[in-house]
Length: 433
Image (cartoon, rainbow, N blue to C red; front, side, top):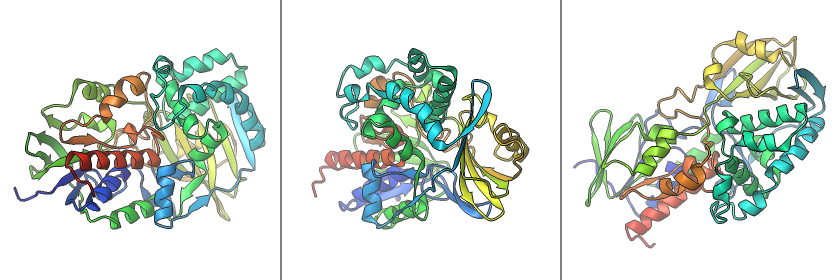
């Protein structure tokens, strides 16, 4: 077969790029097959509305050891978001205004109570099943735990909205253990967890880090090559692309998101546990939207009820005559990334006179190579699905933020998983250098 290498990597997101770099540095020939016409997966820096905007994954933090090590390796800094000046929150049927500190204080006590078990149940963030008691907690939803807190109406509304934002999905099915894992990875301190989610960006954008990793690799990259089939036997593993071209190797890393996994045909098919996890899917099915508003507004943050199409907005860039906002909602079907009037109607629930000039975004749920935003899991995933998804399937190894132990849902989780896949393949192929 003409297209032959030691290792095939399916997908050029952060997990694939890391696995390819590590394996090629061990002297193996590595070929990356990427379905898109670009690298970096569910991160995407794109010129829109007169700026370079992150349409997908964005934020990093020094509490995330894998991504921070990569930034340090390549001498890439971070950009700090300016502090907010004003806050709006719509809760208990009323609009409230105040300082960002006031909003944070409303969330502080409830979040501390909500996440208090993280130190006991997840003492080792990168070994999330080290305390077997976590399995019982894995059957509880975020909504269940908020119910147990018996909060006042304002705090209750804000907590539900806050966790719908974090999950980018509906909290009625959201695993409480996912919240505990984030807390544990952030030193069991929810303010650090929140800071990790939305404060520091990669200098030059996520593409800068992805490109640095690729350029530090000896792997061959082939773009515009969607893989549709994976076959393996005792001697090799073969990927077949959409045009029928075949690529063979001794081992393979498959980095497609969980919601795309069942679109690939595997022969022999994946284990029942992997197929069940893929069929059940996860909850990051929401929207991220960039909005350019008329006028230089105060740098504000706004929260609304979890059921609003956009339940969280923050002012990201202030110019002389415009303000660029980034907004999130928990249901991609409820947000049209081309409907500026609809975005304006939602924003006016907080700021009645705001005028929207332009909007932009990408529907990741309708994207055939993503079908989800950041991975946030359902009840039972941690204890019932994750160990099986991490288990190699013969010559096939899964990698990606969906399958991470630590910061699942972040770039850091993708990098961690890429390292694990590379290490497992090196051991499988008896590469010791």
